[in-house]
Length: 439
Image 1 (spheres, rainbow, N blue to C red):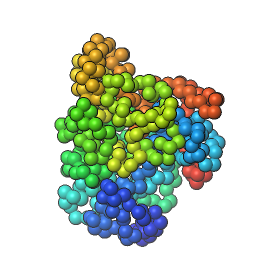
Image 2: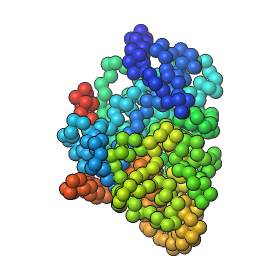
Image 3: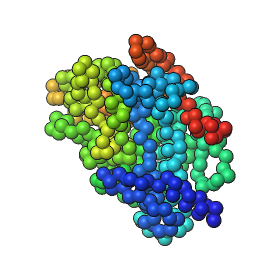
Image 4: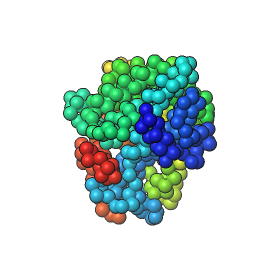
């Protein structure tokens, strides 16, 4: 216990947040050994606030963006954009590894210590439930960055990431299989489900997990595992709490805002200022929209000469981890997979009615109702691409579906990510490999 307490003190003292996100009402953790409910809440709040802003980095690898070759900030993203992972330029930004384990550390402190030190109460249960859910989210991002896409036939042998559930200086951090990591993620969400007692968080603290956030996250986990019925069941539980959609016919507001009706969980932004200034929307992305009937187009994009700038993200008000749009599109996709074609069409059209003009929707309704299962699946996935641009969903969606070929052009030279390319799995950062030979 003495060694543990010393480690807690040194760790928190060394990486405690010095300037916090006032916009989402985050309070810094003190440099003390946590003992009370309030102190453990401060620990977990730091875990939330230090969650890395990495989603936009994945967008650089997708078909969403093209580099702004005139920007002096491009140097940090060039090698990511051309999938040069093995020996990148020294200025290349790195995908988060230690940052996600930092969040896991804070969650572990709450899970392992608050349960012993804090007297029983609904507030204690909620806190520990959030810690389980936050740890699960961090592992979900880790395994989907550094592990192979989930495949039930190979998950038990596919290399995942190290598992750290205890505070132990002597632990050897050896990567576990993708299956082991997913099993832990599901175990953590199951524990969270037993403990969480807040249906939805109020505006300003909706960076915290709630029941609706947990159910929504579970639907995403099971979607990636192709456990269609479990994903659908979780979606329906989430929609029973929050089914609100922003109707763009009457409200011209980007629906990713943390205080929008669609917000469920608002931990991190999808699109950062640096990446916005280093990139434009790709022609492939722009061509997926109807510029006249898709109401998202003028909200999401503005012109800069012959290029399009993406207006989503950048500011704290656009922190968006999960929102209700995802629930509708996940429900539609899983319904198709379960051969409930009529339900899938009804669901995706109820979503689309809030995104297209009346004229556009009337045409779309006719087209969707005539689709077979394959065409409907492609339409739903295309809606995901249009809806979640630069929210960090595209790279993960490509990994779990087609792993399509992508070609990026830089200074007149083409670079190709071939279909099913091994680079759909990102290699561990160099500093992580240097510090841990087990990787």
